[in-house]
Length: 168
Image (cartoon, rainbow, N blue to C red; front, side, top):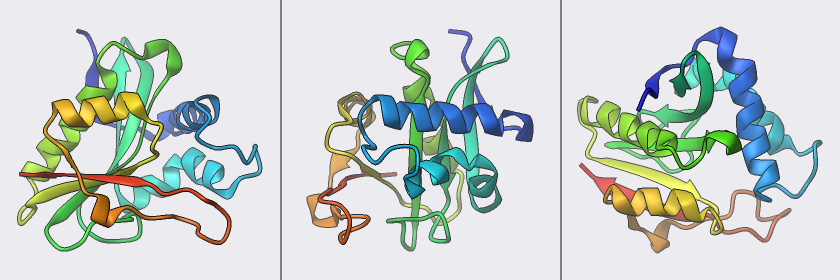
């Protein structure tokens, strides 16, 4: 496998934003169209990179996908509390799926969490239909935490995100 996981470079923010947005749109995870505010958040990698670590999976200088690693609570954390890190916005280009990039990105987040002083757990939210991601999480030892399931926009959506955690 020639896939390398590393921190995203500013010149890659645009392509990673597009990969992330298209993954959500084409997989039917956003049905609000191009004007959806969350779609703009998915595309704004530069903003994410100011508050969290954005990682990319690269093969021969081609960005295959990326993930946002949040080490603790803060502006990019949806779930993470004291002693927790959070994985957000995992996405792999459709043409690169099935080759291990998604799992490699999650493993890189776990490595970073283990290296973070005081971090005892990694948490994440996922849409119920993200089956491929759920398989990755299960293989790596994550367990469902239904007591933490939540709705990001209750007044607009009937969408409950499912949650997972891995104790380090």
